[in-house]
Length: 165
Image (cartoon, helix red, strand yellow):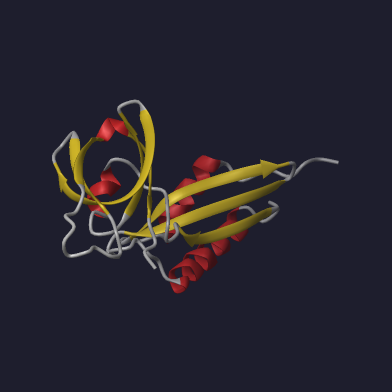
């Protein structure tokens, strides 16, 4: 029995550009081929939304349009298409997302004098190779000063948006 042809990743990226329009962009995409089945995952980002959020309607529209094109161009392929938002606590693309999301709390993983730390911070100022951050706290006693310090961008190993609820 002959195996089915699977959608080439480079062709998929071209097709995606046909169905996505600014301010919606691809945050991440992947194709996982298992035997004669492909799982196509698209995570979307909205560059004009302060949280990067896309609506369910945006996901549905892009999914329907891409599904239609895939059915036309690859009618015999066996695949599952999943289109979703990048998520409320998405991983940051470093260093560019530090500036973009500086108004939000961020969970940063960083090296501080050889010790790995993980803190919730807000970016106060971007200074090129360094950023000034303030430790984020929901409650700040009036008599206590905020804790601010400098981080080298090269010391930050990972970051995520932090949902402050």
